Length: 127
Image 1 (spheres, rainbow, N blue to C red):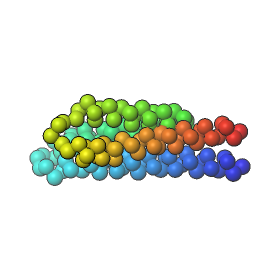
Image 2 (tube, rainbow, N blue to C red):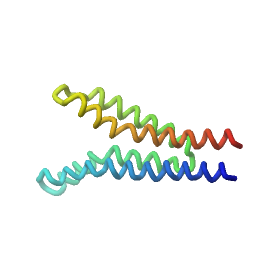
Image 3 (cartoon, rainbow, N blue to C red):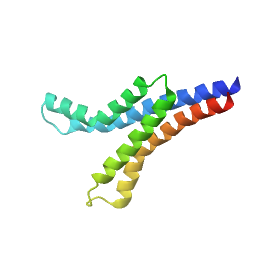
């Protein structure tokens, strides 16, 4: 009985962490409104910059009842984000700042994916 509660808590922790992570990423989209310009252009820029957060919300809510799928999709999301950032790296940035920034962005997705996968693995192992 205790293991089922632990598994549910882990899954809910993963869901809550994913929501907070997506909202955290969306905060970076708000800088579009400081650049000036007309409102439609600003809203368009906000939507474009919010695509990673919207993708996280889509992954979470479309796979809400399947934590294993959520975990694997979040791992794919994190690895894809990592590959994209490596391919789009500019040499003008400091290497340390670049690495820390990218880790801050894609490492939480990998950790959340691992939490979901561990919760399902633990649940099947105990039962």
